[in-house]
Image 1: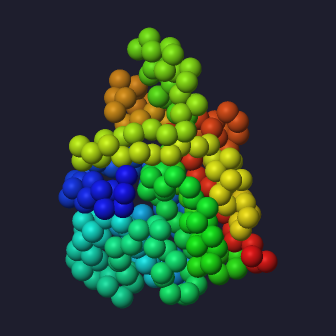
Image 2 (image 1 turned 90 degrees about the horizontal axis):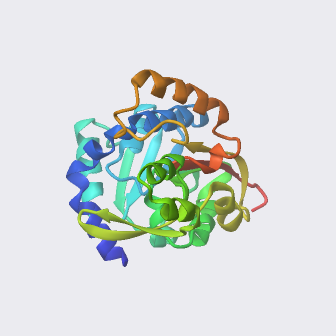
Amino acid sequence: MNTEDLALAYSRMADEYDRLVEGDAWMRQLLWDRYRSLFQPGQHVLDVCCGTGLDALFLAQQGLHVTGIDVSPGMIAQLQAKVEQENLTEKVTARTLALSELSTLVPERFDGILSSFAGLNTVARLDAFAADAARLLHPNGRLLVHMLNRFSLWEWLTLIRRGRLAAAASLHKQSERTFMISGQPVRHYMSFPRPTYRRCFAAYFDLDTCYGLGCLIPPHDMTWIPAGLVERLGMLEQRVRSARPFVNGGRFFMLEMTRRADR
């Protein structure tokens, strides 16, 4: 899919985006806890594929300066409206910009770069993004990459439950998948966390930690699972999410990296 079609697909869902992601509020809260612990007020963070700016606004409210970029003009319009409403114009800069255009950013150095949920999954190769991120970060700056995982334990169990054994057996082999965004097919490129780091980021970044998210906590639409069990699964996930096989079994994974000073 070309950049124009991708931008159009996400612009069409911009008005509904915040409502659509409410089911994963627990995951975003976990990300926010990490941001709060890693970044300090006054620092400058680049939010890549920022969507409607949920993360950007949170960081600004913590006293950080944020530049949010997204390929979708509709998403950026939503962010700009929120910035005006929250009186955060001095803290947040919003720009319509594709990942392939990161090299056009002025050589201002950021203290951190983050990208949450599936924005980076729409890019076939992340090598250029990794190089741009290294160029834009201060030495020892932090890069946080949150992406869809190639294999999801809950999706696998659902396929088994429905008798789709062949699909379950091949789930971990699918390097590309197509999801419908605003009625338009959008190709997503799928990998596991450590291979993603080694292939795309190892030349510039040290890997601090990686972990799965949603490896034991079920998707929000599995309402038949008792709330008490979901809570216990969440507590257990916090303990095992960095260990195999759980790190490779979440719906999403997180890579936390530090830019090496020598690069």
